[in-house]
Image (tube, rainbow, N blue to C red; front, top):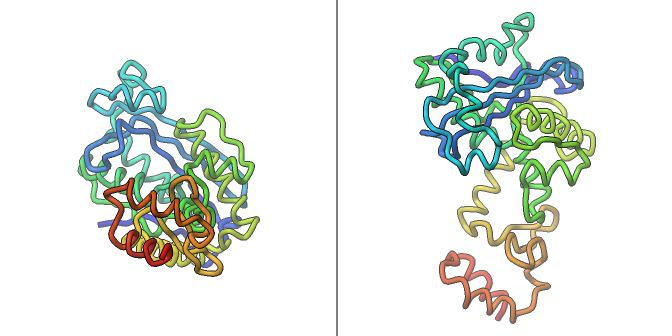
Length: 274
């Protein structure tokens, strides 16, 4: 099985060619939903040098709720190629075969959890054995979730607004890929992310592990401050605020009104409110 991802690990993303990709789909279930639009931007030395956008026939009806998000309906993809028909050409872009054989780094917003597994299922359905490797794909959302955990939303739109990155026509695969590239550069420039591919992927894995441990213990309700380790609320009307500075009345109210609060959250809050 051939795997894709990484690029030349010792290089800086601002020096080495890269591809930032995005998908629009029939839904959010990676194992069964299908791609209706692919978007990609090709970067060299920190600037976009080419773009690609393609709509695809998912071979299943596009649900109305999905169309409300990205605006793509059945009539827009009628007669378009299927993913299986473009899969090998698509892989040529990701492996650098279309650009002198230089293996690019790959990037996508929330790609590790969504786009990569979705694409791998599509590749399997197309009868191909090549797979993308999630931990070799640069994913800015990991760093947004770490550094900007206090934001109520950490969507691509919210992250772009925070960093002043333009995002026009959100939920167009190409527009989202372009915005993701802008976000990547902005976060590197402001030291929210390393600049070398190897360092980005290593730090991405480290932060993801810590955040998974937080999630497994407290779900989205609590998290530790990224600097001093104190507990903060990760949801609710006091999202981002230190638990120690929130009134005990609010904590008691939360304990009463949210019956499915995880037990670790209840135990932690009770100890702090006592």
